Length: 117
Image 1 (cartoon, rainbow, N blue to C red):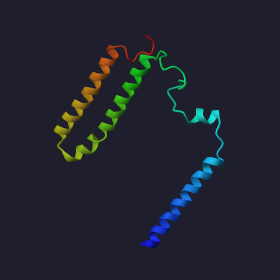
Image 2 (image 1 turned 120 degrees about the vertical axis):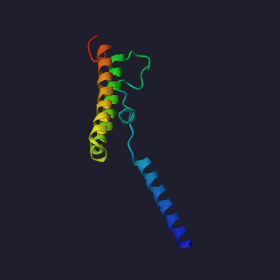
Image 3 (image 1 turned 90 degrees about the vertical axis):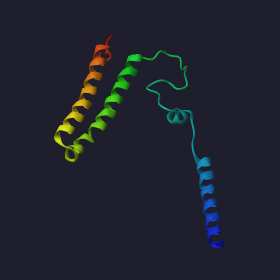
Image 4 (image 1 turned 30 degrees about the horizontal axis):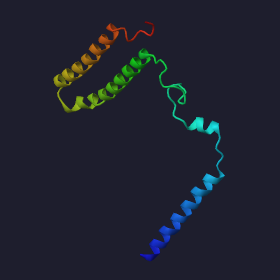
């Protein structure tokens, strides 16, 4: 038990020495701070947050995320084909694809898919 405590204490000291040396030996500059700042879609994070943002760009992004998640939900339908009978599988698949098509028609009807207004 005492041997384990000595080993733990030794590891703790070594880890602290290594962190202290990395802080002392590292070179930090303004460009390093800029590189480590979060990337905000091309905006400068150190400027004002009240600049105009394209709502259309945001809607296209949301549409992409919705369809991306729904594509991931389609994958389990394929193995379901072997587990249930063909009629039930067809109804489930048709209903899911119908919801996607209705959503796509609604987005097309609202002109969210046109990049130019």
